[in-house]
Length: 413
Image (cartoon, rainbow, N blue to C red):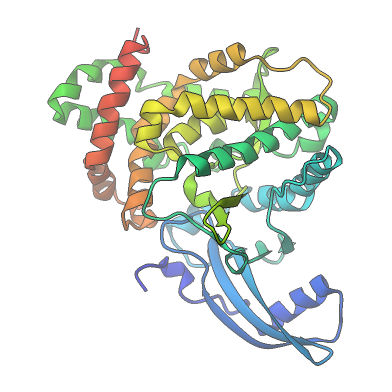
């Protein structure tokens, strides 16, 4: 049981056969549907997600006497009192994700399809509601051959396929913001729109723990004054960048509907019988919002790529993404001036505040969630657990290389 989140071991009372029956009747558009059996279990392993609770329902049912079965993934807000419910109860994450699955992603697929590209951007959403409960029900991808990558770093081919999907998502949104900007105006709730997130110790005290870590590692101590100078305003600067489209739009800025949480646990991969990679499905669009194109890419460098990729391949991978982004824009008939690679990389460089936040606050967590059995609830709530993550050997090695590169590139000047 320790391999699952504690709040997903027992489904809430309302999540029962009667509720599933009503959902399936609406989805199948038949009145003569009867659920025969429902077996509930946690939908994913501990560490795969945090901002919701998820269950897998294996359902046996009959339509006009003919027996069928279906596996469903049910996503809802935390019921149990505690940190997770307190942090997320006033957020817009379910409104955002429901809008993505019911309005945006199907429309984006239609635009791609009209251009001859049959890419699937999302798993079908069978049911969603905000009242009386915030809940979404999806087709389960596991029986279709999709799996989550666990206990290893992603392969290069997996990274490229994920970046390809992201490029298409970004390109269609870039096109739509140019042609029909009002269509996406509701997607304005990123990470800093979650109430009290700025004041949460995980967010606000990352730099403090990072500075203590630098002091403890002799060869890194020389970098401490540089980060000390940034301590008081780097999160303000990051928040301004993330909210730039809504509050301070730049005439030359490249803006897209970003995924918002583009890391390895928010994607599932499918391989053919011969082992060849066939597809990736991006998941969890709860943080999707309009912001600079750089946000998903900088995030991917730290939260998706491996240490080896950050050292050797990140520019190649991002250039691959950008070439596919441009190709998709041209394919779907974008009429404006195409973004330039020079300006794209200039904007990435201008948004170093995100590098700082991810390096000092999030990278230790992602190492723990990728490679170790760590409860995400402990990471968000227990300072002693957080501090231990800064001592992970891989994180120490990574920081040594990254700070040397920052210094070489004039980042601290």
